[in-house]
Structure formats: structure tokens, C-alpha cells
Image 1 (cartoon, rainbow, N blue to C red):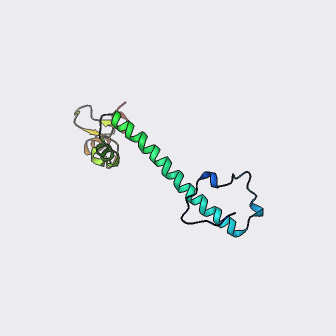
Image 2: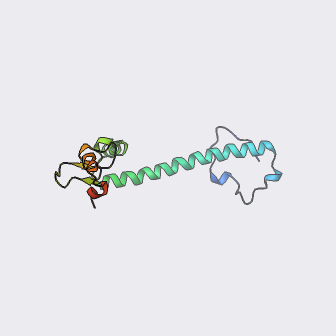
Image 3: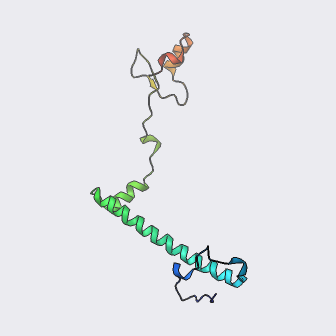
Length: 126
């Protein structure tokens, strides 16, 4: 196996196929050179795959009538807890403004019903 020339670019055709590689017959220096070549090949492959993914993303974004910056802003934006709408799980039949999603402390209106001997499941929204 030839010594690795740092200035030379290596591509997949420079690397022997794994099935035809006699690893037992390689010297440590040959293995080191092979590792360096494979690392460069892996980086080239990652870059090629990323560029292809970017082209597909660009096409999708443009197909939606958006520009890239707008799409990236939307993709990066984190959904705040305040913007999430929780499903109502309990509702007061006597006052429709009294609702509860079932999270946190039990609301006063529901506690009062429970103190009267009524069950929480009675107020569950179906």
C-alpha cells in the first residue's frame, strides 16, 4: 500500500473493497494509511449526502412558495409552552367557563363538587 500523500485527494476507487481486503496481511502502517483514507472518504460522502439533502430541501421550500430564510426560521423556532393548546378533560356542567385539562392542582370548582361527595369522573369530557 502506498504512503498517504497529504496533498492528494482520495476517492472510493482508491480504497480496496472490504471483501477483497486481506487485513491479516497488512502492516500497521498500511492500516493507519487505510484509516486516514477512509476518514477522508467518509467526510466526502457526508458532504455529498448533505448537499443532496439541501437540494431536496430547497426544492420543497421553493415549491411551497417560501424563501429559504423563512423556512429555516420556522424550522428552528421552538414551540413555547404557552402556545400549546391543552385538551379539556373536565368541565363544569353548571358553568361552562369552568374547565380543567387535568394538569396541576385540582381547581376549586372541582374540589367543591368532590367535597359534596361527587366523583371527578362525573365531570370528565367524553
